Amino acid sequence: MKESTGSLNSTVVILLAVGVLIAFFYYTVWPLVRTNFEQNSQCSKAICDECPADSNGQKNCDFVTCYPKGKEHTEENALQCVWKG
Image 1 (tube, rainbow, N blue to C red):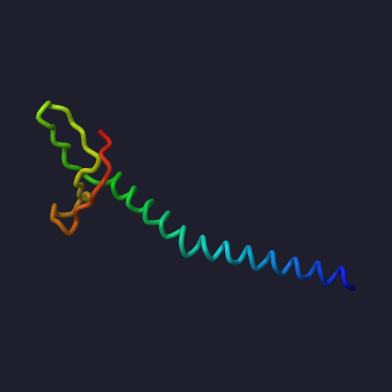
Image 2 (cartoon, rainbow, N blue to C red):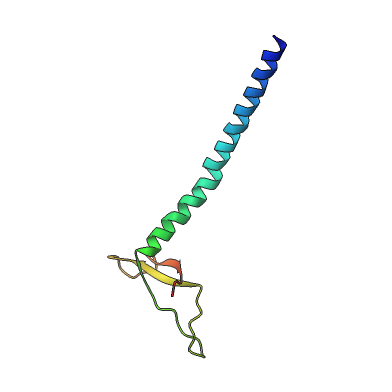
């Protein structure tokens, strides 16, 4: 009887640990992944400004301003997307 009680306690501890890990993923990691995915998909469908050239004529941008297709080019609709060259 003592062995089965110890086994049951181990099972409960494992289930609680798995529940905590699932809750951590769902409330912390998943919103970050979803936001990143949504922004990347919006940027892939957007019309982007050209990367301005510096004084040497080289283009060296990290981010550019983009606008979703079919929407006005206003500050409200502007997206900051990674420059893909």
